[in-house]
Length: 394
Image 1 (tube, rainbow, N blue to C red):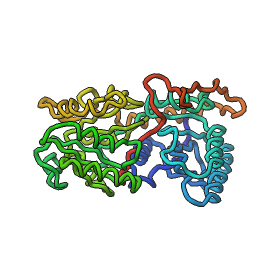
Image 2: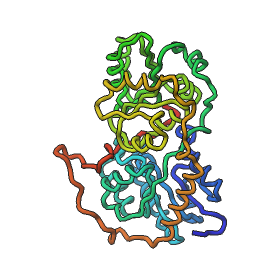
Image 3: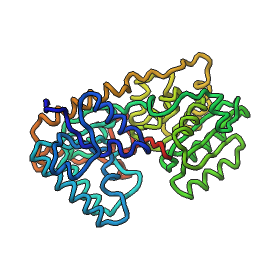
Image 4: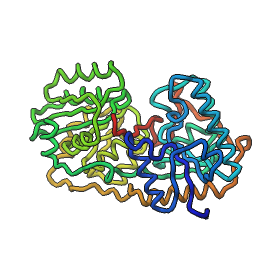
């Protein structure tokens, strides 16, 4: 697609969430470095200005947040009306499928259904962070399976944080044991991240030279109480339950010998990429995109374990992470933003070049098969449809 003045993208979000999650701003910068013009979504510009592509990332957060359902309803109506006007000038709508089901239920069932209907009827293309993510999106939303789909990986965070602290300096700053073999988990603490299970598994691993640091803001008072109770039983555990700013996030990761992310369910993990950006090895379940991430950066840096096997895998993973011949730097070539931006622009161009498929004429595959519990049966090598998007403000 050749449009005078470069491609114009209204992204939701682009830059407005940079303080909470730098992912979108890094992507927007990379796209703009290659000639695109990327702005945070404005309904006014969408309705009356030049827009080539509207790029959504977390539609449930964008449209369903808030306590007043009248505002949520108005937001959906305004967006759809503005999008319809933009379509008269050739605009296309794409969605990066970071997650298939929201971490928290927002709005009412009727409004959630309205958002789903909007996506089904208006989307022109799907973007996903991995091959398995795209496959699972098509299983979860068979009515979108006819749309063109593209894999645009999650880029690294090398330039988004200050990684200059050495391990010893980071431990002194945080008051962590200087000589311990240190496991770290850091970020927003939510039930699906399985932090309590990590504390239980750690309690089963002997070794006075071991330590576990858990840093982040719990999503509920109940979770905080559970974590405090588990930590109180093991003097090797350090809890820092609260907001972690950029510098403390970086310091905890640089202090670590091993970063453990024992998700109960996950599709993509920005937290794993954040740890790798700090040049720290990670232990993660063999779910979703994490298997592909291990292939991308190599077995020196990503170790996977079978689901529900975290306790038995912890001791071998500590030995793996602290071995003497470990390389110093993670090879993140596959996660470079320049290449990701190129792939994203190619996806935009392909979507823009194709005629729209009216919702009434989209091919809807047969209903997905379900397990005995009623859960969708995903293809092999995929996972439960949840995603962790890394947050700089846990």
